[in-house]
Image (cartoon, rainbow over all chains, first blue to last red; front, top):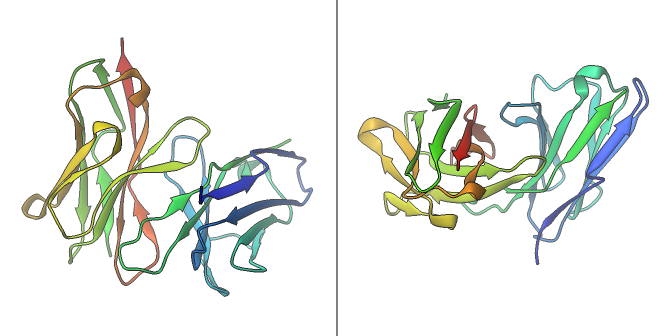
Length: 113
Length: 113
């Protein structure tokens, strides 16, 4: 089945130790998103790619970077995780037809010790 | 600017009774509207979407929602709650010219036995 896959599902890192979260998709969608979701809150968009065109949200901290080497894969790099970065990180994809919904992956739960 | 307001942060119902989760949107145009469900430690799953076709939209798991332009509402309903419906529900709006979803703050649904 076509899907959005996130690895790992659970990630533990230490304060200040870089970490990379990965997302892959078999939907061949042009648009890929990274969201941060803290407990009992709505997902917050960090950035998105339209093909290789990178779009950063204005309030996304510089600590967060992203790479999209090809259509299928997208990575979220957190250069120096702080305790406040502990959250669920959701990847989503969307096709380019009007009104297409976003398809979400299962998320990666990041713990910062 | 568009915004999405979910009027209740928590809703509790008894199993077998109706469910009503309220969502209002604020926009100068008719956006595409979505309801997503999120179970603990999982990604968001699309329940249904409105894209300017029929105003009554049927989704998965017996849920439906009615778009009411005069009330700027898109409330989610289900005639009979099941224990498995207990989850967080997010209403979201997509402007057709944009790529981003605007999420409501979420409603936690509890189903009591």
